[in-house]
Amino acid sequence: MKIAVVTDDGKTICQHFGRAGYYLVASIENGQVIGKEQRPKSGHHTEGMQHNHAAGDCHGFNAHSQSVHAGMVSNITDCQLVIAGGMGMGARQSLSQAGIDVHMTDVADIDTTLKLYLEGKLPNLTERLH
Image (cartoon, rainbow, N blue to C red; front, top):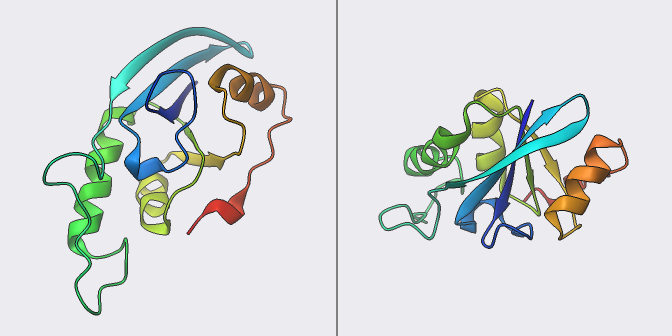
């Protein structure tokens, strides 16, 4: 199993999926982290990837937003789970369509988060979807 965690520094979880600069991808075997790698992540910080908020658009679901979200997902299609501090519904839908589950947390430290998740002790704070 591979778990992608959104981050800016490789140590803490970014509070918003779309604004994170990187993924820390943890490879899991037998309930243990056996390796980690940092991967670039496109997002709202990437030139040309900003959200357009035209009048009448349903934020996160228009064609431009879906294209942005697809770009964010493209580098983690081998992952089964994303852990983030929060995200919009459009990003959540794009991850789901790619077969990637989402878990949201208020735990900041990546190592602690992975440990709690693997122990089944990390609450999924679905109220962090917006």
